Structures are given as structure tokens and as C-alpha cells.
Amino acid sequence: MSPSDVEAYARALVRCPSVTPASAGSLELIARWLRPLGFAIHHLRFGPAGEEVENLYARLGDAPPVLAFCGHVDVVPAEDAARWRHPPFAAAVEEGILYGRGAADMKGAIAAFLAALEAFLQGGRPRGSLALLLTADEEGAAVHGTRALLHWLEQRGERLDFALVGEPTCERRLGDAVKIGRRGSLTARLRAQGQSGHVAYPDQACNAAHALVRLLGTLIEEPLDAGSEHFAPSTLQIVRLAADGGAVNRVPGAAEAVFNVRFNDRHRAGSLVALLEQRLGRSGCPFTLEVLSSSEPFLTRPGPEVQRLIRAIEDELGSAPVLSTGGGTSDARFLHRHCPVVEFGLVARNIHGVDEQVPLSELEALSRVYLRFLGSFFGDG
Image 1 (cartoon, rainbow, N blue to C red):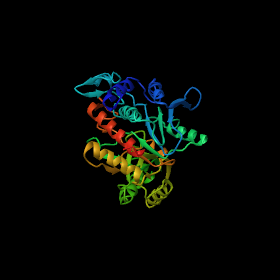
Image 2 (image 1 turned 120 degrees about the vertical axis):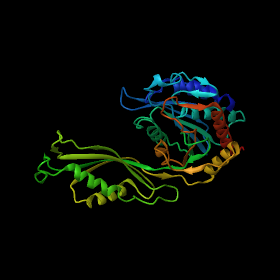
Image 3 (image 1 turned 90 degrees about the vertical axis):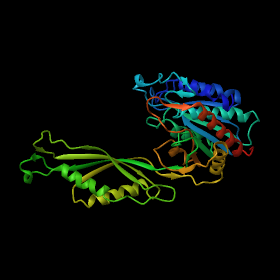
Image 4 (image 1 turned 45 degrees about the vertical axis):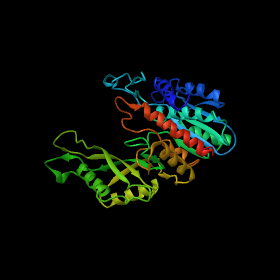
């Protein structure tokens, strides 16, 4: 296939109902396409017995530099399938638009890279190596996917020199953003303890809901920071509140809130927790704080590889992308510990939503960008 044939790859992948953590045959399809190109194929399953997650590692060549394309075939459920214009896994094309769960996040980008890869290898093997790391565990727990794959590579003594993740990074049009880093993320459960009692006798009770309000006020009354060179200011969002006295005339004796912080590179999780606890201490209210940190912030400095990707986007799409660190998390949070990593893919216009879709013209354009980047990375273009 060639970049102009990317539709066939994308439709075949979307037809696989790979709701996380299932691969539903999608990784077998990709392996079948890669073998004729000379790739060594490794099907790898990680996780406890009966709950293993399927992953794919494909490698062409042994010499450095090693360019890795990374991504996931698993998708979120399409629970509202009756509202879709076409069935979520039918991979229907209407008026030049491909509909289906995973079309944009991120089977379309995998298809675009596969088509670019095939076109690139028609000119012979590169002066270096190519690898693909694909998992069915990104939309879920993300424990037995890319993180486990990278540990397996470490045990084999294999290294990667640069990684490209095909997540949907663009905001309004294809090519408007490249992710060169991501914010850290932590979720915290804050509990306030009081003393229950009758609302008519507040002096005989201690309202935990009031204490929780004071505690939360100390967290949100001033910014966490002013941002940094490549990151916006950190944000704290309260996502859940609970205080139930059991009756409308009873003061609650306990209350809790759950909040999430997306934080920039001015913090590490440990230093951020210390800051939060310091602020909470100002309230004078007793509290407990339980924290789960899912990722630390990271940044790939815009070096030569990033500049090659920027030029490929400019040459094919006509304008330079913004270098961004916004958005949620991705498997790049594992990859950055092994090599420089950037993310570039389709437009995130309706990922995870009803009628997830991508114009075929954007799939073809993305494939041309990937093809140009391949040539530039290996010095062939």
C-alpha cells in the first residue's frame, strides 16, 4: 500500500471491536501486514493468568538509530451505539469520512504510519532500525501494555533512540500541534472529620461539611504556580463532594472531596503534595489526605528530531505546529524514561464520542507527513 491506500488499513482496524483491553484480532492483522516488509514479530502477553493483555513488538534492523512508532489499538466502549450514524465497528465511509470507534483515537494514525512505512521501504532498508510498539492496554489500566513492553525491552538489552506516538494531538486542524511533553497528574481524596448532631443545636456538633469547605478554600484561593517555559499553570479541579448526615436535620460528622491536579514541571508529585498539605494546614481543620500519582511531568526539548517532524508538517500541510504540553495523559509518560518522545496524530475533534470520525483526506495527509519524517529521520530526504 501507499499513503493514498491508507483507507484500507484504517477500515480493517476499525472493524476489529477492540474495546479495552481486548485487541480483537487487530494486532494479528498488523503483524500480517508487517511480516512481508521484513519485520521480526513478537506477540507478547503481560498480566495475571486469565487477564493477560496482548501487545505487539515489531523490529526491522539492528543498527542505530532506532525510531519507534508507538500506539494503542484498544478503544473505549461505544455504549451509546444506537445514536451513531453508522454502527461503531462497521468502518463505514460516507462522503469521504470514515466513521467508527478508534478512527481518530488512534487506529487512523496507526494506519497512516503503516501506509507510510510501506511506501518508505520501497526505497530499501533505512540506515538504522525501525520498531513498532503497539498495545491493547492504553485506554484502561495501562499496566500491562507499553510500560510492560518497555520493561521487556530493557531485559533484552534493546534501546530506542526516538519515539513517535500517534495520539490525536491536533486541536482544530491537522498539523496545528505537536506534543513535546505532558503534565503530571495526581488524584487526591480529602476527608474532614467532625461531630454529627442536630442542626438546631450546632453548638453541640461540628459540621464536617463546613470544615471541608474551609479546607478546599485553602487549595483554590490562589494559583498553584504561574506556569513555566513550556507549560501552562498547574490546575486543581474538584470532581466530587460528599457529606451526608442521613437526614435533612442532621449535621454531617464526616465529609470528603476528590480532586485532580494537572501539574507542570515546576513540581514533582512529592513536592506538590507537600504544598497542598501546607495550604490545608492553614485552615486549622483536622483532615486526612490520600494521594494517587499516575504520572510526573516530562518534556522533550525541541532537538533535531523534533525539528525534522516540524519541517515535515510544514512541507506537507503548509504551516508550523504549536509545540504543546497540554491535554491529558498518554503512554508517552512511560516512553520518556527510555528515549526522547513526541506525539503527533489526528485532530481530537470527537474522540470517545458518538460518531467518532476522520476525513480520509486527513488520513492521507497524515501518512504523507509520516513518510516525509521517515525519510528525514534516516537521512534519505
